[in-house]
Length: 351
Image 1: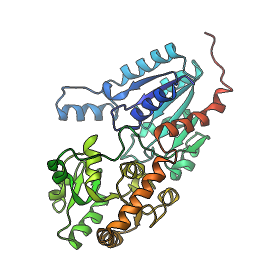
Image 2 (image 1 turned 180 degrees about the vertical axis):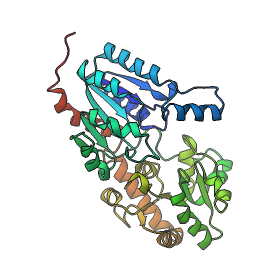
Image 3 (image 1 turned 135 degrees about the vertical axis):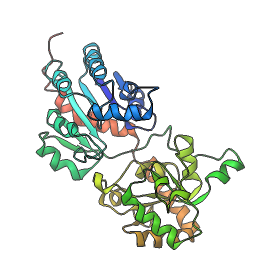
Image 4 (image 1 turned 60 degrees about the vertical axis):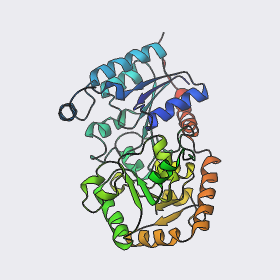
């Protein structure tokens, strides 16, 4: 299926993983990376102001949409796959569908109705899609109400070229990354009580936190270790006895990208209890779960003192993920199969 892929293609985004998957599957495609339409060399404050003035769109918004239509005219795609909140104009979507006969598919990795995660125009454009694929079952009824009747659930996955057990290259690396508990992700305020409870209950806890905004919390700032991307991400997980996987409830998450990445990297995962997590992983057999700050403290204390049980579960979760068709190539194949019935009824314009 000829596919025009549009999204953020930087190496830790789903767009990049789907681009890799299209290449691996031998699918004819063109991939447009929204990140290259962002300004380079602008001062941060100027970029921030421009982003706001553009309605939370990249400054190269109009050039991006022009290039989308040009690429579509050359490729004649059967499917246009847009990841998340890529800044594709409604007028562009209509031209792709009505003038070029492409099936429009969105793979929604955030809640499009969550204004913190997505600008308002993301939800407005839902009605223009033929198929809306979501990582969250909780949003599916709202997507139908917004005008797209065909909605499907396809969970996150992992990228084998990035997510695998990493080895320390030196004693210095081991010293840098070894810890009791690690979390890699943004410092949302709703997450603070969990981590504050941990450090209050276990004062000597070796806690490493990576990601934005943790340094703004006076209690947690001293545990902040900057950012962990690429190999550092794998090493941060390798060095920890316990890797946490909390959810972002405002985004209606019941699993996240880390839900598959952490086990794929061979780490023991202690995740927030939720329906989709429990669907994927067995409690006490493959992962541990918590539902409150108090239970998090209890479970961290328990698993820090049960090394063999923790290691056994990590190996079981690793096997579950790596043998269970959970790569992004598998996720893309699911999307292609979901989109296939729509292409049978395409009214393709004359060449």
